[in-house]
Amino acid sequence: MELIETLQSRSKGLFGGMLGVRYVEAAPQRLLAELTVRDEMCTVPGIMHGGAIMAFADELGGTATGLNLTKGAGTTTIESKTNFFSPGRVGDTVRGECVALHRGKRTMVWQTRVTAPDGRLMALVTQTQIVLEPKQSPQQAIAALFEGKTPDEQKALLAQLERGGAAIYQSLAATEPDASRKTELLGAAAREVDNAVVLESHADG
Image (cartoon, rainbow, N blue to C red; front, top):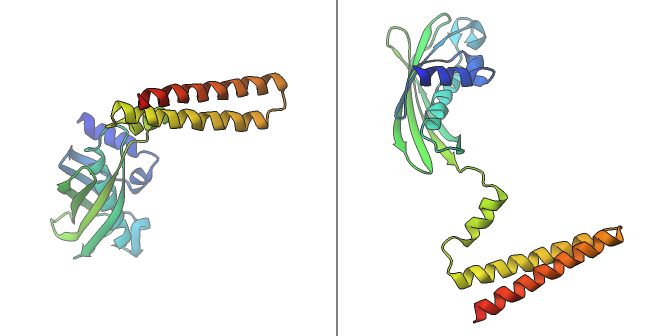
């Protein structure tokens, strides 16, 4: 029940909350939710718009994917196919059952059955979600450059970064109007070059 409450709370103020999605059951491989058809969801008076059905299913597929993501990762829909079988009517509480067809590291595929109160199948939606890797901090991105490299390769790479840093310090010094700060920046550039020389000599050795 705690997971259901969390999902319901997260949807407040967002599209799912605006639709009126109510979660009933939630697990990494299956999600069940309900939605009451309102007048503003209709394409003609009394008949639920197909886009509202698709949006309901998409909300479930995205939410279900979220239950399977690692911390910091995200997702977005990259493909969706809908077959319509029968209409939904205003006042009906329709049900969406979203089940996993594939839960991979890069993509996940979900199939959602949208049914009327009497169990009649309204639509069958199959969608593919791409998994978006967590955003790395600058430090993590730099550290990733060194992964899998030998010590000599790491020294050579670090020397390149040191020389790149020196060029940036020199560029900043060229635009610095304060003489003392300019001197400090040029000193920092020189230290970067010295570091690069040390690394290059160790790599050669």
